[in-house]
Amino acid sequence: MGKSKKARSKKRTTPYKKDDKPQVDPLYEPRKRNARIGGDIRHKPDLSRFVKWPKYVQLQRQRKILYQRLKVPPSINQFTRTLSKDQAKSLFSLLQTYKPEDRKEKRARLLAAAQEEKPAAYKKPLCVQYGLNHVTSLVENKKAALVCIASDVDPIELVVWLPALCRRMGVPYCIVKNKSRLGKVVDKKNATCVAICKVESKDEKKLNSLKDTCNTMFNNNKEALRVWGGGIMGLKTQKRLEIRAKMLAEEAAKKAKY
Image (cartoon, rainbow, N blue to C red):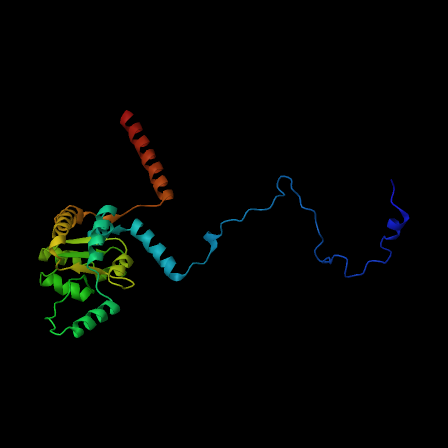
């Protein structure tokens, strides 16, 4: 059945206004999307290679490459040898037990002591000691039981002499990753080194096992202290040296025949 005359009469008779038509930019003509090969939407490329990184990031990367390329003396190369993951886990669990008290804890302790009728003699709480000068004096006086040194201190000259001092004084020491991780133990942003002087009787066994591990790995391991680091060339240089060595070996084999 066809449409009735009334339905036909309801058709729009007024002309379209200018606002009703879609606005088209005269500079850019609309083009149909091409879904054929080569006409698909281009994937977003990785532009991180072309990013201008901050200066400190550039210096970090250049320093890392220099440490790989140049020959690194044993006194600096020793900081690449650190505790393993499980050893560091047991060490930091002990350090967290003797974390220094913050302002709130100190205030609460002083208030509790002030409210006592007969205040007892002040007893200094056992906690981790930090600060490069303070730790140095503890090592010189042989009061430190265990010293932990960060591996990524910059400049390295701040702590490069500390392992030698610990060996001279017979104090067990270890090198751990991340100065920020040591800083968390003492509520600071970073910490170059920390020291444990005393622990409670329940933790003495754990401390003695850590001291034995540190003596074996660092204090008494004299062969590792003579190992030079670095000297690792890039992939292109390694390939070039391999080709050169192969050519020299072929020439030597030819000369041996005649």
